[in-house]
Image (cartoon, rainbow, N blue to C red; front, side, top):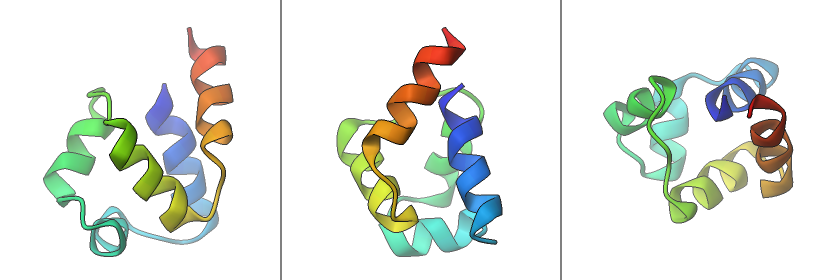
Length: 67
């Protein structure tokens, strides 16, 4: 699941969903929906990747292994 990789990065950087929401401008309720399985838009994935300072490819690779 895509959220698993996001969560790994949040844990690695000791960042909360609330802080990610503040950095990205994405509502924390939206981020919680992603955690529950909703698919983020490309625009929001870019914001998340930028906030976590990782490449979008990191999330793409994780998604492929989850299928």
